[in-house]
Amino acid sequence: MTRLLLLLFILLTSLSPISATETPIVLWPGGAPGALGTEAKDIPTLTPYLPAEGNGAAMLLIPGGSYSGIYEGQAEPFALWLNEQGITAFVLRYRLGSGGYRYPAALQDAVEAMRQVRSAAEKWKIDPQRIGVMGFSAGGHLASTLINRPEDGEIAGHPTSAISPRPDLAILCYPVISMITKPHATSRNMLVGETPDDELLRRASSELQVHPGLPPVFLWHTQEDKLVPVEHSQLYAAALHANGIPHDFHLYQDGDHGTGLIGTSHPWFADLIFWLKARKFLP
Image 1 (tube, rainbow, N blue to C red):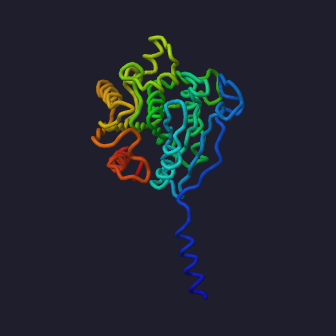
Image 2: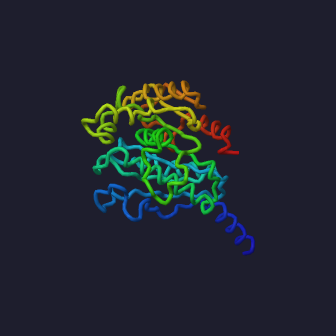
Image 3: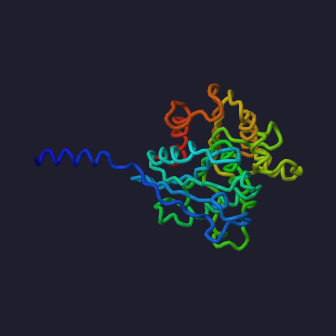
């Protein structure tokens, strides 16, 4: 009997979770700036995923969805994968064009999310200087805007405004980048409307907003992407190079838009882990 109980204890211990999901945090308890209502679409949230044994690094996860929805396959599955690596993850569900929100509403949410994560670093047991952002497709555009132009998401006089919202690194997965060159029509219309002026188009085109001093970037795309042309990542990589920003640009031949999800085999996972180790986000 004693031996049986011991074996049962070992089995239960081996099945202990590698992460724990916290209750979603409402980013703006008093209402988001410019809120159009009080429905779920008007209330951006941040969901923490805590690894069983964290290494002190954290990642803000921004799923894609053409600024018209949130693609959940790029949310919790990647948060749990990051937890497996020992990285604390925070999934941002931001305001969307389909809910009537235009630039810079989603950026305001991303800026506030970064500030809340960094300000609570002690609570989450993370290093405030090892907080990255990881975005997919349109979420990659939002992530690139967060490192390029966080000032556009500033709310004057907000309690967290003294805390830096800029991530310490960025991971952009087949991102939407340009609103001018081969734009992704849905993302563009949802973000800046159908008749944006030239200044807004330039401001929202991330390849035109790169400047010295940005954090390191890991960028990847596939040549077979039929939804967001590979030129988006090529333009951004060229701008990073021209401004002396440390970056890895991985261009793979195979795979349409959204390839390399959790549960699939793709070389980008190994390439990312190698890069994260070099950046001290992984041991």
